[in-house]
Amino acid sequence: MEDQDAFERDFCQLKPYYMDTCGIIPPSSEEYPIMGANLLRLLVQNRIAEFHTELELLPAKALDNAYIKHGVELEQSFMEGAYNRVLSARQTAPHETYIYFMDLLVKTVRDEIAGCSEKGYDYLSINDAKQMFKFSSDKELEQYIAEEHPEWDVKDGRVLFQKVKESQPCKEIPAAPVINQTLGYARELERIV
Figure 1: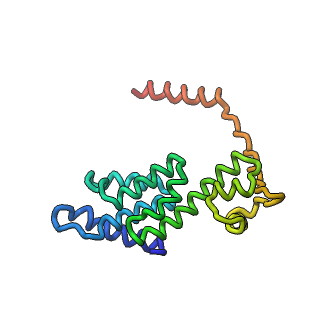
Figure 2: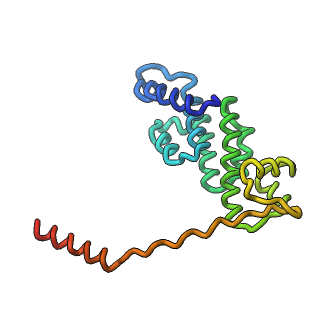
């Protein structure tokens, strides 16, 4: 399960049997756990559009299944920014194989929090950062910073964020020439029709 690329390949090979034989042969007892694990994989990889595509392909009754519902509720919490619910959902995972994906989802959530924190704050106290990132000790927070955000500094009981370099101003679009060119195209089309 820890090789996500292999899981994706295997799921792509298995999916036609679940979708195309629906109603022809009895469903597998592992069908919904595997489909739910695939939804979690897409969520962990932050592939939200594909997550929703997979949901749309499922029959309506599948949305009531505990394995599918778990992934849907996680996605809703993730999109709402209710990261506490996402981080605490590990304890309510409906299948033991989901724990791997839940651990990866914790990292994804922390990365989202980190991105927002960098943009929203110049610094955070270590206690606030620890609480925000859901770490139980200063050491865990410092290890996360060292591995994931070495550009941050920890000084005087605070986590100092490096300001993102100011983005280059957009080049101006030459409006008058573009308008003239578009009108010229319109005239040519009018002549053709």
